[in-house]
Image (tube, rainbow, N blue to C red; front, side, top):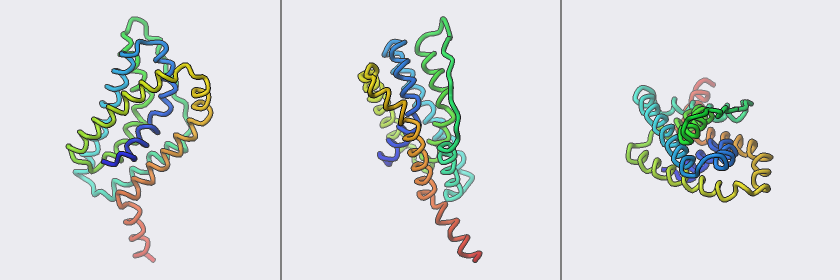
Length: 192
């Protein structure tokens, strides 16, 4: 388990949602936001891990390294995720969970799948525990800074660029760690 990679991945994937969390924490009870965000994170991590296990059973690790291009692609793709949480009559837990899954599912699955590739079930359990703890810490930190205008202004100004840099670093790590780049280099050398 690479703690620094997991931390960077978690922060990069969720950075844009942290801004939404500031608003959700003001609108809904703290416990509902905390538990919905925790459940959402653990659910998406589990789906990513299982999908990676299935792919790994059929393809060699170096070839799966091509998944490193997904976070790099996401860094250069320009899209705005807008959520509509005007659901009346639903519990705050389901509203926050639905918002998180609708906004972050694609990124989480595509980013965490290559990062979790090749991990054992025990390492994955440790990863879930670590991400769960990190999730709880982040929600408490966000609650503490929710009213700080300087922090929210900095996130609004630099958050998007920082997220894109993190995505590129994660993609490069996956390409290198899987052996994809070494394998492709070896093929090029053989051809020439």
